[in-house]
Amino acid sequence: MRTAREAGSGRAMRGATGPIAPALLPDTAAALGSGGLAVGGVDLLELARAIGTPCYVYDTGTLEARAREAARVFVGGAAYASKAFSCVAMARIAAACGLHLDVASLGELRIGLAAAVPPGAIVLHGNNKSVAELELAQARGVGRIVVDSLDEVDRLEALQARAGGPPVPVWLRVTPDVDPHTHAAITTGRFDSKFGVPIVGGAAAAARERLQRSPAVRLVGLHAHIGSQVVELQPFQESARRLAALAVSWQLEELCLGGGLGAAYRGDDRVPSLGDWAEALERGCRAGGLPPSLHPSAEPGRSLVARAGITLYTVGTVKRLPGGRTYVAVDGGMGDNPRPALYGSRYEAFLPRAVAAPRPLPAAVVGQHCESGDVLVADAQLPADLAVGDILAVPVTGAYGHAMASNYNRIPRPPVVFVADGRARLVIRRETVEDLLRLETDGPVPLGGPG
Ligand code: LLP
Image 1 (cartoon, rainbow, N blue to C red):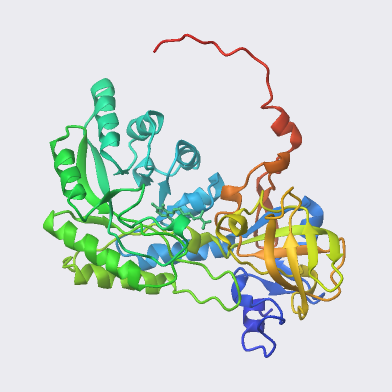
Image 2 (image 1 turned 135 degrees about the vertical axis):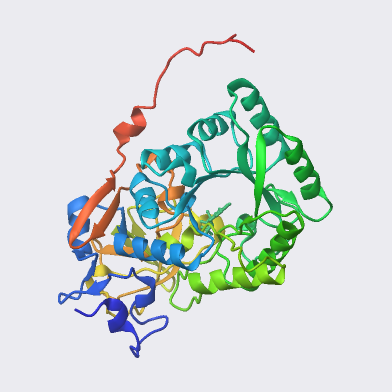
């Protein structure tokens, strides 16, 4: 069977009103004789019937292929940035494919440990790490703690004074002051940032001195992350150059250049490959004087998981405004994907029952939440015969979808299903209203404790 990706390449009818571009679908997407679509050998309509909607579907073939590719192209190693999609099943895949794990909270750390990721392969991030996070990281022997501020060093020292133990190996997170040309909310490496310490102005040098004096830490490397959904290579290369120059002058051998490579969300989006990105980082490091024996590492999140995920919804209401827009309302929305509302992110939509059909109908795909900003795809193109009851799919939702889902309007979060080899595996069950009610209580709060 030809995959939909192959079948679609070179097809004449592309663009706005053509079928969904195969490049937006997971690796194993395959057109079915029925006109439908299988992913991981599973018919998406059958899956929607079995598990209900909305649901997040991940192709494990794509997850594994991207994870292995990252492990291969980053000679200096790569850690999967689990914030993009954190669950035990995903952490297991990342580790099995040769990646380390980047965690940025107690919850992500606990998920990584629950997946039996070796603690030494875990990197702990956070611009305001709690004592509980640092304590667990230190107790379990997390591989690297990425020091983001000097207040954190105070906490690490207090911890060592209490618990003892050898100094923990750390990277210092610096801001290289490079503009990644992405959304302001996900720009992180400028001078004016809540993350890290700026190289410019001497703050990084002062932090280094503080770290060198500390009995609680051992500075072994540098870290920078310039931002997310970055689609140009030049800012990555420049950040690498600046960090490499600093690492050389400070005689540090470990250099992690963060994540950030963008994903293509719409048919006309173009993004560099993981290999292109790795080469740009290497080039920057050479330009900064890093000796050829040393290689940077990276922390990809989105670029490994975005295209592996598709969200399935059921169309509940179709409203055609006379002389105006068509609104297609589905049984999910900003609760399962807040990215359009938060960043103005643009997606596409299609009907899995008619994956090769033209999509001449312009429509706004909206959710069921109580606000007008609850839009999933503002300018979707859909088949003309779209009807209530149809299963509607939004592709490329594998990154920062489930990860950022909320219970707004007390709507339970959708389940996560992994598909491969014709089988579907439930890895996170659907939340229920009972789950939400279980948090409701009316107990006294004991006041006047110590402190
Ligand atoms: N490393 C660090 C230190 C990070 O802060 C991040 C992302 C990554 C790696 C992974 O970046 P990626 O390869 O996924 O771009 N919620 C936003 C994205 C926030 C990214 C936060 N940090 C969104 O939905 O676009």
